[in-house]
Amino acid sequence: MKGLAAAGVVLPTGAWFPSCSADKPEGLSWDFDKVIDRFGSWSIKYGRLEDLGEKGSTKLSMWIADMDFMTDPLVSKALRDRVDNYVLGYTRTPVEFLDSVVSWEKRMHGYDVAREWVAPCPGVIASLNQAYLTFTEPGDTIVLQTPVYDHFRIYIEKMGRIPVENPLIEENGRYRMDFDGLERIFEEGSKVLVLCNPQNPVGILWDKETLATLAGICERHGVMVFSDEIHSDLTLRGRKHIPFCSVSEAAARVGLIFGSPTKSFNFAGLSGTAWCIIPDREKREKLLGTLEKSKLDEPSIMSLTATIAAYSHEPVWLDAVKEYIQGNLDLVYDFFKDNDLGIKAVMPEASFLIWLDCRSLGLSQAELMSRFSDDAGIILNDGISYGTGGEGFVRMNVGCPRSVVEEALSRIRKTFG
Ligand SMILES: Cc1ncc(COP(=O)(O)O)c(C=O)c1O
Image (cartoon, rainbow, N blue to C red; front, side, top):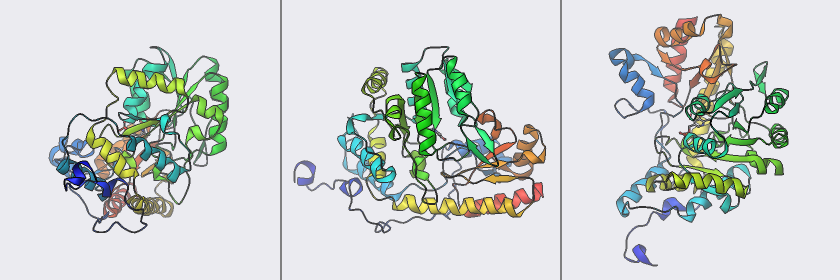
């Protein structure tokens, strides 16, 4: 023993690399059925209801992508231990952070990552912004395959770049990439494509063949791929996520992966917990140079603690939350299958967001949103915000207690039945 341990101080080793057990960690518990009052907790999701005053208090908040559950108790325990036992001084990124990402990618996704490919990052969107600054010029175009997470478009525009859409092709509720469309767009000179893997809001886990084809096309046209893999740990029904850079040598050359434990472990409010994996040395050094210049290369002590704690034990809580999410998704999917309301649910392959196809209702998008928000009292995300292909759709977040989902479905039956 040395240092603090020798002095009898309890180090938070239990949360760092505890013995891997498949059981619920002793003394730690969770209850996903419990309704937690998030009003007044500074939450963006509930802030929108607070702004509506009395009227807001009766609405269900099922939009922005965080869950209404407490985080994994091993993460909270590590954060508590950190506050209780350490000085919260200036912090350098410990090697444990890099190793926890390397080990997690191997255990969860079978991806062999070298430690030097990994670096801590501010949030995923903040890091994508830094990557646009590093690898593109103002006025350059950046390709998005819509419908896709709206903050890609929003921040590409804020950074003075131009988003260009190559919409996914939809066939019977299944989506695939339009490679011919990509070739046409790339011929006009884009330098970057932002990939959402898995894709929010349509819930697709991209397969190896698709990703390898994408990598080949991109490399041929000198296009880099920024792969946002923030939802990758929330794969459902035992499905496998495939990290973009793992699919081929071309993918490793053109790809940058951005991820974080915030979606899977539900601590999206802890910014600075993200990371990137960049196998190509030159690209890595360029991006890290930009982060360093902006002083965005020093995560806070709490964010480092949270990420290491999340990744350094067996995913017992994560498996349990995924099973609970699947139960909620099944409920929603079966409800729309069994009730002829003119709405169809697209079952996601990953994450807690479900894409509802309301096109056969024949409503304008404004009417559709008003029926959900004003008549049913449910706040959802507007499909149109995700770009071409989103019209006639809404996105529902079922990362909440089952009773909330049941209440939402009962309100939907009354409104649309
Ligand atoms: C696909 C995707 N990427 C990124 C984010 C946000 O990531 P961050 O909070 O790390 O910027 C979200 C949040 O909903 C998301 O769905």
